[in-house]
Image 1 (spheres, rainbow, N blue to C red):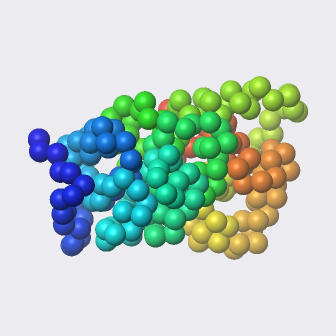
Image 2: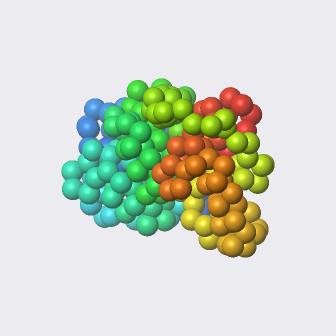
Image 3: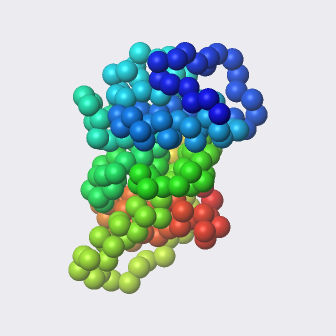
Length: 236
């Protein structure tokens, strides 16, 4: 199959076919970029958009809002959590694919709005599953990344026994981990913002996590997002 390079034009006009997902790539490593591009070009459900090496170049392309953007963190120019925030502000769903998978990097990216995080050793099948999950409004963290965060948590001093969350509290925590703001969670669940904040207060009391990154880590540790949640049969 022919690999379309970043210098070639692609049509982004018109409606997507049923079940198809617009996907763009921001990755500065040429070999890895071409490999990912080939995987996406061969996936029947993907409408391949911009494939570029920096956020600045991504701005030049008219990528339709709502696309899933595979984003590396170690980019020239705008990088890291700042790159996540900038692409999210353009109206896209960011799925980070990065060699940097330390817990603080993962939590920082998700706090900036990323809906998923994969390490660069991910295989093609899991990459496509993650893209579908994020496109459907879910969150996805690969098992390798989740394992690192869980290990980091296990290395910390022991705390009291885990408090059980209600189904609604789990929903709220899952949406927090997906990068949603309080007002967005309220709209998604059809409840008031004050009600959302009440749930968050109870979640914080039960988990001991006061800040957003800590809540993201707690959601990953409980298997509420990513590969662990899929294996448990949880909702996206």
